[in-house]
Amino acid sequence: MNVEATLTEQVLEKIVEYIKENNLQPGDRLGTEMEMAKRMGVSRGTVRGAIKILVFRNVLEVRQGSGTYVSDGKAPLAGDPLGLELIQDQFKLTWDLHEIRMLLEPEIAYMAAKNITEEQLGKLREMCDEMERLSAQRRERMPLDVEFHIVLAESSGNLVAPKLIPVLRQGVELFIKYTHREATPESTAKHRDILEALEAHDPQWAKDMMLMHLTYNSQELRREAIRRGVMYDA
Image (cartoon, rainbow, N blue to C red; front, side):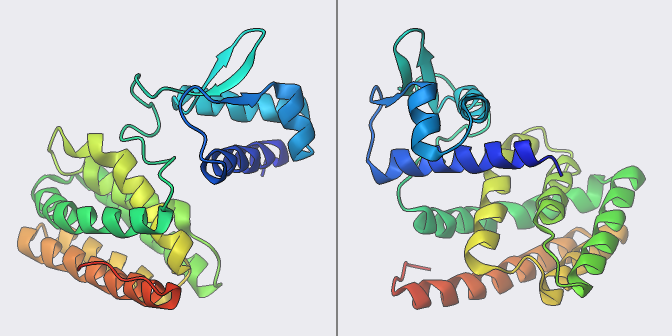
């Protein structure tokens, strides 16, 4: 693993947290690269790398000779098209994203069962095999989980579904972050059930298996909400 790349990602997350914790608004100044590097105890180059990514996502903008500012958000965000990254209550966002996934993904699975190619099925098989291997070792498998849902959207044959990938990606990542379900054998088995229905090219079966998977996730998310002492409408 590239240590510098990992450090850049950590600094990126710290910058986003700093914006949220200090309730910075569009146009507010974060400081120069030097100031931010000193504040975070990292090199200026690492800060520069994190800023570049956040500028690409339209979270930040750099003004030459002045410093780095929170973007006004008028341009589309390349990696966050709905502007979800800076929402203050990230657990409520996780809940609401899961509700959207409940609406979308069973239908995406339904379409995928009719349109998926053998090549795409092969990718999903490899992912399931690897997820099962990692799960048996109780190792983190979030990237594979995210990729499974992305390939499913791409397999739907629907032109709009792949455009929803940033939303699906953030939904899966946040769910795993708050429920710590990335290494459980139960979740891995649910992905295998979905794959089995896709291999049979049975749309209703695929839809039912995806709904079962997400309903199982709903239970875990509700437990976490109770633990936090919050509750939202189902």
